Image 1 (spheres, helix red, strand yellow):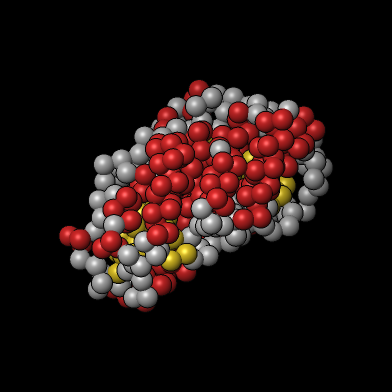
Image 2 (tube, helix red, strand yellow):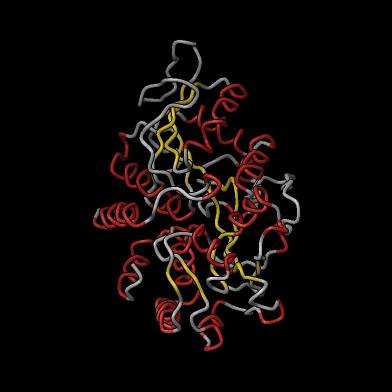
Length: 363
């Protein structure tokens, strides 16, 4: 019970530190409760609604602008009547921890693998069928078989090609603490994706290794920003040479403005470097929501080609379902990214990451 309370506190604390909203509707939203495709009540369940069909309540950590258009398609494809409650991923995870067996949610859509890992370790997610799990690579689903990724994003280094020669790009995040990069690196310490990256760094290189890198980055006069969008703008304007971001911010900007209008390009760290971490947005069926059949239909739809291409086109993230390829031009093949070997379920230790960031004075 003590560990349970610590996890709740950590996730709730993250909700205060992680800013809402970002490019492409792809970061956590803190919007108030809404129902998808029309009005609905808080309570889901297998009970028949007025239409006589199944009903489902979804807690979505992905924002309404992105998810709401998909809900109508989901309802049409499955026959399930859906109500969606929108808030940040951390807020929803904390709520599910508190609600426990009394939750009204049947399905959780998470912006981040760490929150799903925390719920999995607390026994609050239901094991998924093998045919569903088998449709997504093992690296992008929960090790306990109770959650699955629905879209993927890679950490990258965005650089200004007028200020940095391609041949001079660093081979590792550790190179960014060298003197040659003094005052030239942007990062977003309060951003959820950066915090997940630091969690992965802790898993891969230990607490001391992560602390050493963070302190060295600060000592090298790296510049802190509020979010990835601000970093992208600053690098593109030539205000700073490089920045640590997620890949999809750049591709979304290219889709709006055209590649030729940008002074920036992306660099993927090679050799399994932590700077090329692949994280996922994912989905899990709650163990106590009483909506398993309806929730499973929703999971299957979210892994369908229609839904996978929707995410790819709207967010520029990678599809994760087998056989679905992103239609985004020039996007590197997913399997070409040399990501670090880290179990995404182990990215649940956000409490320790936040404590470390506070200790070094980044948040």
